Length: 605
Image (cartoon, rainbow, N blue to C red):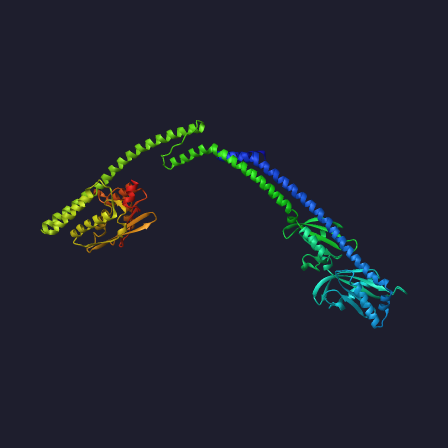
């Protein structure tokens, strides 16, 4: 275990050692200054958040208990109101009398109406006698449409309580204004003058709006939701009306709130809540208040964010100072590094500006001495290579002309012997142009237009020699005539086609020259419809052009190799010739050059 820890420590040290000096200084600064400051800020904000959470929980538990006490007071008032008819002998006499008179009806209606005015939120009062009669007073809405159904439940609850008030929770009430939920207080009424026999019962049917305002105020304080459960864990009231009447006996938060009062943390739909609860000793009902942790700690979150923001501002300010200092210290080293990278790419026209005589300044001074020495050595090598290339170019170019001049003069000699006419003079004139263009070695480059003019002169002489059996097709736009190329580029390729592609053919042939662009390059194609060659001969030709195989016996076959080598000498190794051929289908020579005009070449030189 200890050995593994040492290995990890060694890896961390190696990673740290491989960083730049500026990165090392910043890491040291962060470790010594910024990290402790951030940790202190985080610890203080966490403590403040925890304190706010505890205070909020205590406060919510207190107001939950107070709200439940108010609800108990409301129910107690209803209990007391249900006992008021027992102290009105006239009302009890009317209720016990089976006969119906106008005075009885009027008196009972007046008493019930006055009874219904005591509590402002009371909805309706129902009075039932033992003869199937019911009297009622409705404050809002209308008479229950399901009165016959609930009357039986009320009667059972009243009889079971035996003169004491009974609480019937969460009954769906059907009225003219629509369906809503209510709870009812039921009390059996007895004849107090004689034998205390039951003579009926009274019901105070109450809307949830009676205590809804208190719960809404509670929700406004806690930013959460409130749920009131009866003794059977059935929802009597909920901030979410869709939960009314739902059985929550299996809910985790309800099971955890089993004691008389307290608070428990819960997770609902991935969000953390605090549930404060209290149980009523009067009704057995339980009040649960769900407080979102996010809302409870919102102020603490704001305080934490402000603290972290201020700390971050100080850290950022200190970091800027540290970066400035580390940059000032490491800038000379970075400068030397960039200069070395420039030298690595071949740019020797660099120099370190030495301002100070410290260690970095002395390093820069020796760097300048080294670069100057390397520049002098490269200049010597460049001059040597230049002289070598000029000599090689002159030698390569001189290989072309003697063979061509010999063939041309032989043609003129034979033509002069056969025909003493003006055609000989034209051929001699054309030959002069060819000689003046080819023998001049002072200019190693030409334009495509000049090459095509020279090629037309050459082709006219060859057609005279071979009785016009060959056809030259040039498909090069005039806008490309200004492109730069080497001298005597097309003529050796065309000459190679005339002497090899059609040597076994009695009829004529066609040579086509075209051009296309590929990115920054231009590619000329010289194609013939001659006999072509098989794969073995094509491979041997490609190797002779690339100088990987010696020329044929007697120096034959050097034309294409000569052109390829001169292109590479002038433009670089990425340019030159490529030959494609199929036996019986002809041969195509591709010439790849940089896409530059003669003016651009002059500026480069």
